Structure formats: C-alpha cells, structure tokens
Image 1 (cartoon, rainbow, N blue to C red):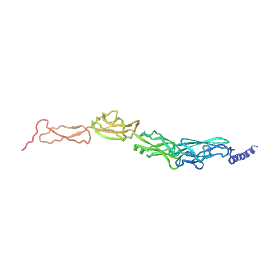
Image 2 (cartoon, one colour):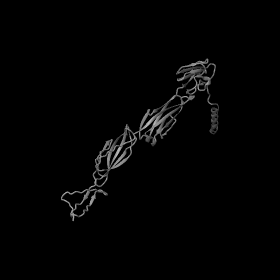
Image 3 (cartoon, rainbow, N blue to C red):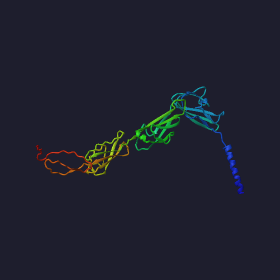
Image 4 (spheres, rainbow, N blue to C red):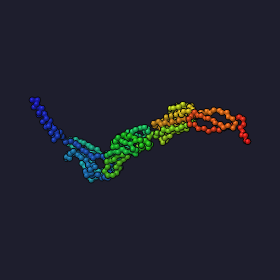
Length: 355
C-alpha cells in the first residue's frame, strides 16, 4: 500500500500544478481604476481626456450602472464640450502655472475605488541637496568621504550626481550616495557637487532641475622644512598654508646634540633664541607644527633647525727676536674652520733699521 501511494504522489502534485498554472486561482471581478503617472504638462490647456494618453484613465468595467466623479483642485479649471465632473471621459480646460491634483472616483457593482494624478501645468520640478547643508560646506582636510542625500519635488524620472572633482560616488543615480574624495580634490581647496533630476514631461518645458553644494577643505596642510643657524641666532619663522585664516600650534624637542633656548610649546610664529652648548658638534631642534582652521586640524609638519657650534680657537704665544718672521699656529674646535686676523702693538715700539 505504501509503495502504491508513493507512486501516485508525483501524479497528484503534477495535476495540482497544472491546475494552478493553466487555470490560475479563481478570480473575481472587482472595482479598479487607474490614472497615468504624474507629469509636467507643457502643451495642452484644453484636454479631451478620452483621446489624450497622458490623462486617459483605465476602468475595470464599463457597465450601464457604473458612475464617475472627477475631483480637481489646485487651480482654476472648467469642463467643456457638454461634459462634466460625472463623465466617463470629460473634456477639461486647465490654466498655466498651477499644480492640479486630479482624484477620480469610480463606482461599479463591486464598490467604489479611486486613483490620483498630479499634473504640473508648466510648473517645473525642484531638486535639492539636503545633506550636507547648503550652500557651502567645510570639511577637514583629513576627511575621506561624505554622505550625500537629495530630494525631488515633482514628477521626476531619474536623478544623477556629478562633481567638478575627481573623486568617486558609491552610486550616481540614487537619492542618497557617498562621495569619496581624491587627493586632487583636497589639493584644489574646494569642489562642487551637483544633484540633477530629470522630469516626466509632455513636451519640452522644465525637463530638468539641479542643485549644487560647494565643499571646502579646511585647512590645507603646510610642508616640512629645515634650516641651519649659528648658535645664538633668534628664529623668525612663520608657518604658512594656502588656506586663509589658518593658525598654528607647535611643540619643540632637542633631537640631537646639546641645545637650549627652545620653548616646549607655543602658537604662531617661532621666535626662540637657540644656543648650541657644544663647541664642536651640531645640535638639532625639531618643531612639530599643527595647522588649525576652525574645527579642523591638518596633519602636523616639521621644522628642523640645525645649530652650528661656535668654534673655540686656540694658539700658542711666541717670543721672537726683532726682525724675525712669525709662525703662528691656530687650531679650532670645529674641523675645517678658516680664520681671519688682525694685529696691533700692545706694548713697546716697533721700527725698522735702515742701512
């Protein structure tokens, strides 16, 4: 018996699927009405609904007892050609510059149903970027990406994000997307993001709408630099960037040698008087400088100051006979030193004897 059931089961399943596929579930007539999509009307002011595809309604039945009711709001209108609000296919005059809401109520033996259509009579759509805030936005220079979102009011068919920069969008045809900045974007100081919508129109009026936001990068970073000074020289260094209004915080540390005079930290211009306490070895002081503009800080840059030692010169006093030549031997604490000298008589008199 079990084997018999197992053999018949596939046959029953096949018959059941055939019934559903070929006959489908049992359907019942009902009340349905459908109006076309919302759109911008560029041409027609006098509309014969029955012969104009953009306005033509679709009904589930067309029986003697069916009734219709057209409810129109948003601007002035009138029926013409012997039609009225209860006609199956009325003829309607619309004015320019209004947004009309058309509600069609259809009643048949199964009940009442309705649909709505919005017609923009030579009124364009509006596209707006809602994030970030308009019109300009500032982001920190180390920001990698930004979330974008927009809204469109009106019968649009598509949207498109674009930019004056060279970064990339996660998607270009959605209301929300993410834009990743390129190095060139940041080097430029500012880029534009454009959000554009294309409208559903009958004709060529107001086919698109667009909105733009400018994104600034704040601040633009400075560059590393270095300089060599003699010991005891006062610094006079002002960090700069291409971003106006940038301030600077800095710290300093001796990274080699024996230097003093450097301030542990400060702001703005560097004016320390640096001393190399060695008479033979260079010393290096490194300043770590952080550019700040508003709420943003750029990556730090470095200003390296090499302090050359002040040489100590030694010599040996000599006693020579009158008329003899000198042979002074000078030595310096710094290898490779050169010398300049002057002489003067400090006691006695010098003269030359002539024969």
